[in-house]
Length: 399
Image 1 (cartoon, rainbow, N blue to C red):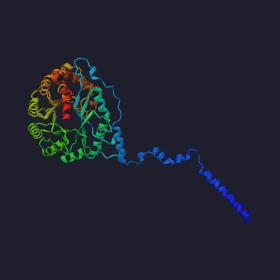
Image 2: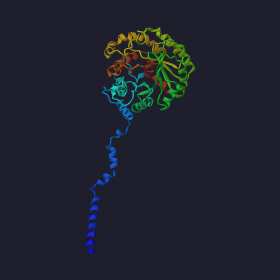
Image 3: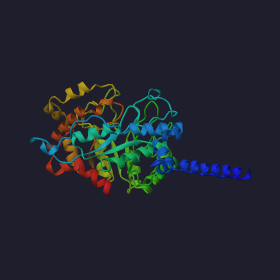
Image 4: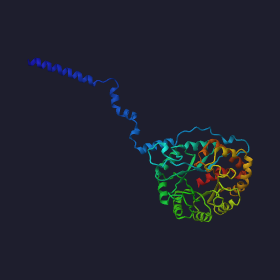
C-alpha cells in the first residue's frame, strides 16, 4: 500500500515539474517583450494624461504660436530693376501680439483679441519679413502679468527657431502706467539674462487706458539704471510737450541709446492720423538730433503722411495708395529726404507693423510697402542709403 502511494506521489511530482516547466517556457520573444513592457507602455501611453490643465493649455498655445502658414516664396531684392534700392534692410519697428492672458484651459474662442497662439502664429511675421526680403527686425514683445514667464518663454522659443531674424525688445505695460516699475522690469529681465536687447516701444503720449508719462517721471527715472545695467536700447513714442524732459534724460544718461518716433511732439490735429507732412513738425525732432548724439529717430511714415496701417483701414485702400509711386514721392521726398541726409547717422527705417491691424502682415501688403520704400531709398544720396536702410540699426546693436 505504501509503495503504491509512494509511486503515485512520485508520478504527481513529475507531472507538476513538467507543468511548471511548460509554463516557464514562453513563446520566442515573449520574455523580451515582457521585460521591455514598461518601456513599451511609456511609448504608447499618452503622456498628456500626466499634464495638468495649465500645462496642457500652454503646450497647445505654444504649438499654435509657431504653426506653419501658407507663404509665397521669398523674393531676392537684388533682382529688382533699376530705380530700386537693392541692398539689405532692417525694420526697427515691428510689434508682436501677446499670448492669451485669461484663465488657462478653455477653448480658443474663450480668449478675446488676436492672441499669439490662439489666432496668430509667429510664422505670419516670418512670412511677412521673408517675402519682402528684409534682413532683420526689431520686435517689440509684450511681457505682462499674469503670464510673465510664458511671455519670456515664447521670446526664447522665437530666437531658437529664427535666430537671426528678430532683435527682441521687452514691452512691459503696467496696469495703469505705460510701463511696469523698475523692480518688475528687473524681475522680468532676470528670468532670461541677455535675452532682450531693448526696452520698448513705450508710448509716452497717453491713451484712453493710460495717462501721458513724462520721460523724467519717477517711474522712468528709476528704470534707467536698470536699462544701463542690462545694456538695453530705449524706444519711446514721445508725447506733446516732452522734448525738454527727453533731452534732459538723454544728457543725464549719455551711455544709453534712445530711439523715438512719431510726430506727437508737435501740436497736431486730433483728426490727423500719423505725422503731418509739414516740415514744422521736424523742427523739434531735428533739435533733439543735432544736440544729442545718443538720440535716434525712426521714420515710419513713408506712404504720403497718412497712417495707412491704422486700425479700421482696409487692405484694399492701402494697396490703392501705392498705385502711383511718383505721386507719393512728391509728398515724401520733400519731407524726409533732406531730414535723413542732414542726420545720416541718427535716422533709422521702420514700418510700425504687426499690431492690431491683421492685414498689415499680408505678403501682398509687405511687398507693396517694401517696394515703395526701396524706390524712396534709391532717391537718397548714395552715401546715406545703406545707413538709413540698415547700417545705423546694425551699429546700435554692436555698440
